[in-house]
Image 1 (cartoon, helix red, strand yellow):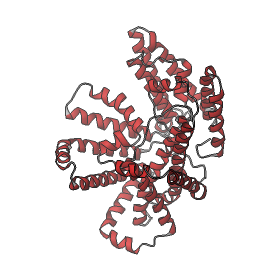
Image 2 (cartoon, one colour):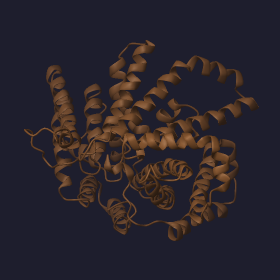
Image 3 (cartoon, one colour):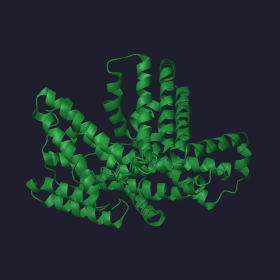
Length: 476
């Protein structure tokens, strides 16, 4: 029951209406039933995996609320290591024992969304261990927190205290809630079905033959993939946030116009997959550096976090995607280098603040960050490290002759259509990014705003690639 299927468009209104007509005491059981039913639609066996994580989290979590210090610590580590161990077995075991004849394969892989609710369960345990009073909740609230259907497949990874606080409020469905939720869903569907799923076939076709594709097509496909993965993942988040808004639950903003970032630190901490970046920061980076403030420890912490992120992406159950590890390491090195230059960057930014040159430098910084991310996406998307290096070598060799290649290349209607979709996306996000421009657009007549939303609906109907394409991050 993907967000882009007819089944979901039937399921969501039914779930919302029943939630709001049920008496208050029945609402939590209904959210639990709806969430479990939604996840079971991807395979009834998935409930077994979710149940295993939930049992570990609930048992350990109960001890974290009331037990004495030694038992709390034991419960925390037992629960956390149990969930990480289960994740490790499902994501890596079969691939690692493939060449070990005396270790049998188990034939199990992590189901859709497993990592996200496993990370959510670990967040529950850590936060409850640190602040038991602020994170106290019923078993039913814990289950809904873990299994909430809009976020179960690809996040965002919420924190338990604000999530359960939102669940505890008595909400009434209002026209404002319906409009706000529906607009987020429409925008997410546009990004996913119109932009990402139209870009996907071209990217797949070119990246399937990295050694034979024309270099300029490798360049185009790499640009297109950057927007495909952004629209795919941020589109999921928008639909999840819009769906949750209809229940009176506000999920965190997981993406914020990522390709306008002017530094790698801004890209990863405040623009791209913000909830996962926060998870790694709070539960891995800070524990590593502790109270140490030396640059060496900070650099080490950054590298460990990004290599760990790469390893997490690399575990696909049926094999190890080493390109993901290279992607994580490369982004870690970007950040280390940027932090080393941080004093110089701050002085330059202070000196140029408010000037025309400062704005030009800001645009240049955004373009630089985008292209550094673009290079790392090659390792993320290509099948192997070898394919990644082949693509980058062929692109690099073609760069000196790029103007002539562009002038002589027979661009097709497909190229122009896909580039036009990206341009529309960037124009809309530019309006959202620039406050002054956003205020001018907001001041336009209401009819103009509604015309824009109707245009999105028509784009979904006539331009949408409705082939039930899975969301990219479901596989992780």
